[in-house]
Image (cartoon, rainbow, N blue to C red):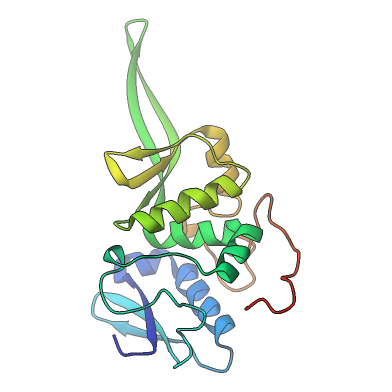
Length: 204
């Protein structure tokens, strides 16, 4: 990936089902660098969204050479302050990039009869322990999403309690519900979000 370029891509078949997610990515890149142009490029098997600037290291100081799960990923104080004030957009971005909302299906034998149950569940998977921690910390700030638990290993986090799933549905939701420009889904502030402005001198 060229220096000064941050790319975001989805497999082609998935991109057809979530065009709003691609558009939301374009809008996010464009809002960070309004003087630069975010472009969508159709590649073999995927749609790539990219934007180039020598200043990308300013809003994304964590970006650098190497595999992200082998690098320390910590937020700068000004970034942490934004996440503390607005945890739900941060959670939504993590889930829509490295997570999913699925319908979990299971069967139980009750009174000698086998019954089938279905319930929604959120998963988040990442090989970086630092990113996992940032995700779970943000869930704590989002009005304390309870019932999260590691699945198989610390790289997978599940949220399955009904109340917690309902709490995440409004500001996060499944990827296919991320609509195009003007959608409340991709811009929903979420419960507990603050509209307070950052103190003077804080980086955007």
